[in-house]
Image 1 (tube, helix red, strand yellow):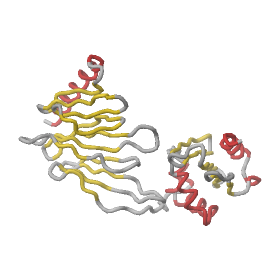
Image 2: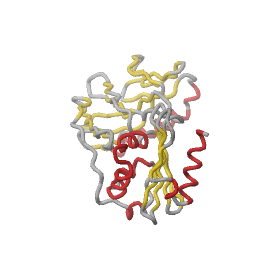
Image 3: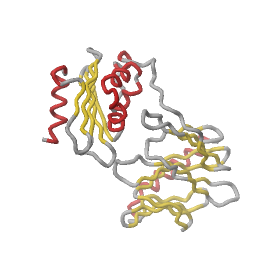
Image 4: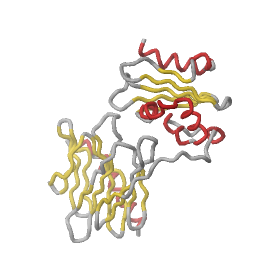
Length: 275
């Protein structure tokens, strides 16, 4: 029964998506469980409307997933103010039997949110970071969202330089969860650990070049003004750090003369924007 339910919804989504251009103002439009659901583009915002009743507004609204939770159809969407300062936040649109549709959320979070689907609830959570605890919310058809307790960050001591060879890291802040690597980063930073962590956990990205990982990030809303660089050499088992506090000079750890040539090249390229 559930597979048929998914097939029907996906088929309808495909048909509606192909016809979006017919209604210029409609970003999304569908008859769902006896109700007319529309996302309209209005000037610089999008509006979610159910049976003509406006229930949610933001710069960007997406309808993403559909699930059956305790027998109640639940549509998971995301709401975003646009830009890259914050990630989109989930909301849930549900259709209880013999009752009006209900809209819960979006949850109050600026960070990436993971979702786990269970038979009787949806669980949403953020990853605990050195500068911010992890948060968890559960959603049920009867009660909507409920927030659970926060989880403090703890570096994974089972992960180190060997695990970094898997090369799955795509953001420099992820290295703070590798216990062996994080310990070296903290030793280099000393009293400046919190200041550096706050920046490197911001908006950023990274990639591997052979056995070197090079990543950079900036403080939200202060990109090009407050940024940090992290270079990690897997072969040397060593990290190289640099950051530029707002309106201050670049700080480097360890001293530049101890950086290998490839790390120095990454530092020069990163620092060029402030010359």
